[in-house]
Image (cartoon, rainbow, N blue to C red; front, side):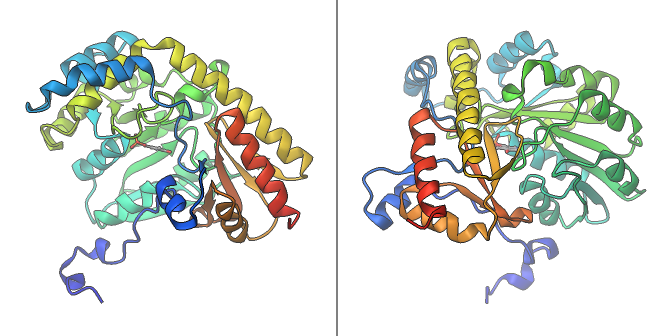
Length: 367
Ligand SMILES: *Cc1c(COP(=O)(O)O)cnc(C)c1O
């Protein structure tokens, strides 16, 4: 029994920490394996890009200084690329920090927070950490049921989370549906539209969401450099909102929340069109490679707009996950998302995908 349990905030007392994907080093140590393939945290499989590496190296001699707390350079680059004003941008230590800032700025224990069943695991954790009440709306075909979500909103609701595409299901909402939902929200309800996987969405399916905060000032769109831009280890993401909301988030954040290497690397990543194009090409090919294999194995999967896919292994997925681990393949069980028969597979390189497919076949056929 933790001696400090009674002293912790009420929400924190019941809190179960987020479980990250198993690190490669840990599995290698445990099993003495020479090669481990990690397809568990939706990371970019290409490794760090050359432009990013050069920017980091150029920045290293400056590390005795504090970073630019205003993030001037990165905000200017984002502003130019995304056609949004720098004053609408909030930078964060990963986009997770933006989610947390919104929570700490606007949500207190008397409030309710609405999100979907099977939605990203951080939403319930952040809600509980501030002691607010989660209202989890049953999903429709694994995706968000926007009508049911709207019907759940009450006078107590202060925040709605929408993940588009959602993790771990990969489901995507149509742009018009999403906009009608946002336009129907009462003025006292903020909406976080979490677009961590935006870059992976097929161009014809993308929403013009960054223009929306001008029309709907209660909307905060979040994006990240962790996934398509390959900077998960550096921790840098951002929110786009009305200037009024950005002003409040910037009051709450720590003055140096985005570190110097991350700021430089993110700015460089925005200029590396080749890396992004290659990332998307590898992802598209890998998605086909994995889903064809699932089809051969007679397995159903949830069509995904992200860099991962959740597959139904038609049995308790945990023993399958564990058998894959013994073969040096790390994927993600999603029982904590109420999907006990699914495994979420991040798309890797062609070789990594093939190693996973071979291992999955062996495991399912009991070899
Ligand atoms: C990965 C992820 C994030 C945030 O990742 P950061 O590394 O903190 O930017 C946010 N939302 C979803 C749905 C994610 O899968």
